[in-house]
Image 1 (cartoon, rainbow, N blue to C red):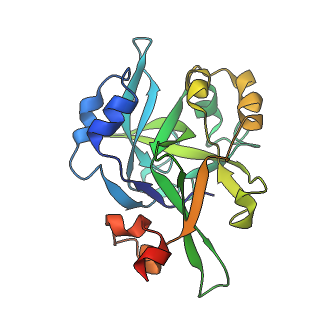
Image 2: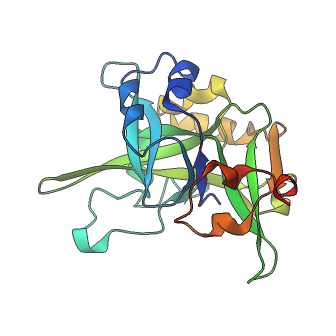
Length: 227
């Protein structure tokens, strides 16, 4: 599961980290970066294949809107897609075949514990490089409205991650980015089998993150440093 994201990187850092990706100026869009409490329905920068044969930055609404969705029936639970069924689900199958993307993030949150007293934990790369998540994107049109949207793929959690949630995002090794974006369905199982979480650090953070309207860098600070 991945339902709350931190995107603390500044635009310049992402431009340098993915230095061959076109249209990086859109990372300067007001309110896009940095963010520390991104919820479904808000916007994430991502990378997709461009019409010119390279890759380009795009801004996606988090929560995929199928092309056939009616304006009064926009789904609200499409921010994640199960990797086991994504090729068959009507909402995702066309995007899975033809419109893949990656979503680089600083980290994300999960909650564990009993209802009413759940503790949030923050997941991020130990070396502070972006987590690269496998995603799908779609363009929805209605009259004059055009929305690019995305979903993040999930898989069964491994032993390390399973102590916090039974699902985890599909993490991509940087070397697998091109393979994923080239839309070869046969590559997906090898990507799933190649997921590595050894470099991911996990620690508890303040329950202040529970409030989706709260957004500041202190949300990703380890709880032990805040006490």
